[in-house]
Picture 1 (cartoon, rainbow, N blue to C red):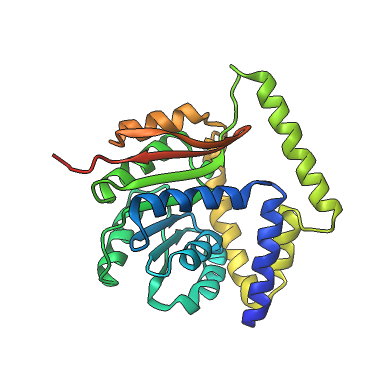
Picture 2 (picture 1 turned 120 degrees about the horizontal axis):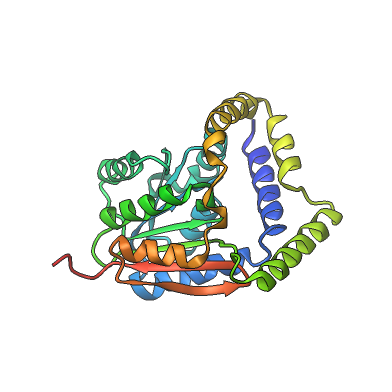
Amino acid sequence: MSEDEIMALLSRWDRQQEGYIEQREERFKVMFDVIESVLGGSFTAIDAACGPGSLSKRLLDRFPQAHVIAVDADVMLLELARVSLAHYGERAQVIEADLGLSSWSEKVLAAAQAANVDTPSVLLSTTALHWLMPGELAEFYGAAGDLLKPGGMVMNGDHMRFDSRLPTPRQVAKQVREKVEQETVALGEDDWASWWLKAEKIPRLKKLKVERDARYAARQPKRKNSGEDCPVDFHVASLRHAGFTEAGTIWQYFDNYIVFGRKPLSDE
């Protein structure tokens, strides 16, 4: 599998994702603007549920002095991330860890220590944490609060569905999202399923895709009540409970949000 094949697949991934999240690049920009304003250009970031490394790549390009620890449990997407981030050298580490298990934060801290970089000061995630069940999501925010240095920040960009209290916005958001998806596919781009079919045809990825599918199949029965339908106030309350004294939303388009949390500057 050549680097060109990987980069072409990553490009298809980005276009496929934009079919589900039309404002994807705007979300990235908002997060990076906050980082630049608060942290400057030199910091250690965690890309939680990094997938193939789309967020990490953009962050490292914008901040040439930054270091990223990219974390995911998906063995196939991690292989793509390793290839796509390889040319950043020691500025990027890619590690396998399940964010639904408490051990993820220990692995991140060990990676930071091994690379001789500062304790992470920001955790970012986009379109990923909805895979966690509500209890796991709350525990994840708690672990992030323990891991990040004083003044550290969390920003999570994801769909956080309107619940039964807001049936009209829920229906409108669903219709808008489906319209964008249909228009994207009509232009010849991949949907979620067709992208994975293309990926598994690449020989080097085929075995990893089989391993990935087996792992997720074993976990699927308990995922019936995932965090996909957790409303935004659940995220904000979980961040506050985890010790983020600043917690709220910093960007929104219908049910597409960035939630923000920041720890106090001192642990005292």
